[in-house]
Length: 178
Image 1 (cartoon, one colour):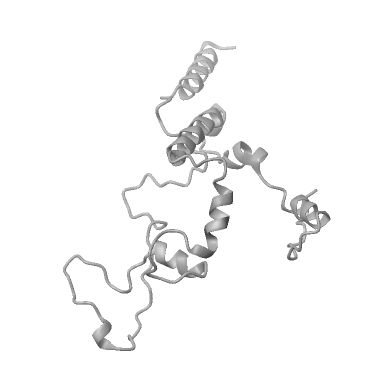
Image 2 (cartoon, helix red, strand yellow):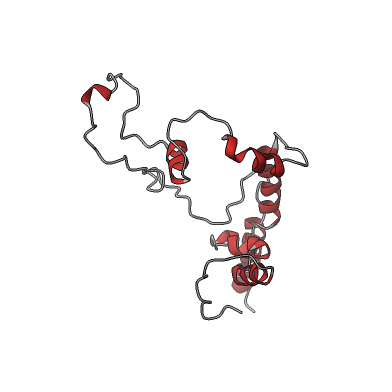
């Protein structure tokens, strides 16, 4: 080997070893879908609702600078309507769902569950952040990291049917599925 090749091999090895050294404080990026460009993020744009003429023009609220309007997205109210609730209803649990909520919370409720899950997931993502070359070339390692937690929908459907539960039809297995 010539001296130039030896120097190039050593430089390449040093570059790869330095690429693996990163700050552990940095957030692991399993999906690699974030844009580093200064432009707008097309996934954060939420289209407004369609304009509609109200039944009675007296129902329109008075315009307020900086206030909301009827076409602004309201994800909480939209989710309530999508799940069969009434928009604008007072918060809390409806009386008809009280037994369900009591049963679900029979072993206690952790009021601090969101930060707990967030920190546990961050630890998991740091441990499963991919290999050096995967991080270097921004390879998506999300499905490898979370693959063991994936639910086999067809096995679960079969289990529920064997237990006698009425289940809707499921999509057919895709080629390559076991």
